[in-house]
Length: 254
Image 1: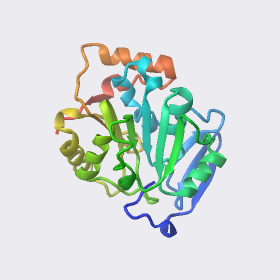
Image 2: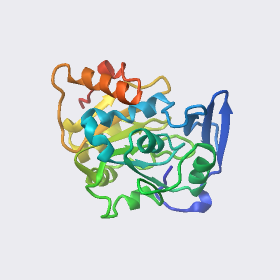
Image 3: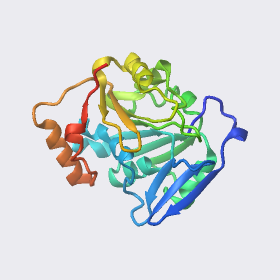
């Protein structure tokens, strides 16, 4: 979660619910803001969260452990935990609501900060302009929604330009576009204004309505058969179910 104004008095209450084998995080409403399979706390439970890892398609497997992943909006901590525990990357998350962090540590198995894991309590819009982050991020995952899950809180060309500045030369950003009041076309136009039209890729929407868009710092294309091979390798190495990615992940044409 993040907001344009850092007013902690307005932040929603964080709650947790269990649905059989799966635990969910909520921000003052029934809307699910993140999930965890209780018996497998470091796996990626939700399909759209799995798709947020599509940047792995553009990174050499041997380089992953040396990379830096950043998440804007902690949610239930799934991406941060996966990058830290499974990928063995340096993982940074920027989160506005201290309750979200406390609940993730207490109920969602988020490890404490350490040499390769850090959660920064700050407004993402401001923190990503800190020069210390610029050019250091290989994988940027943006999932910023308010407690109503109505639309991305930060969704301007200026914001995405700041995101692009975070990335290393071959870095990628993935964005979750979802919401009852959001405009997919508007969001894509803002991302394209910052990254360029030839830098964008997208999945088909999930059943729940999440559409994950990927933007490359340096645009590229796969050779024949390369996408299928990379998908198979990701599934074998890290257990992410990527079979649907082969036909469902394509360059985004505006």
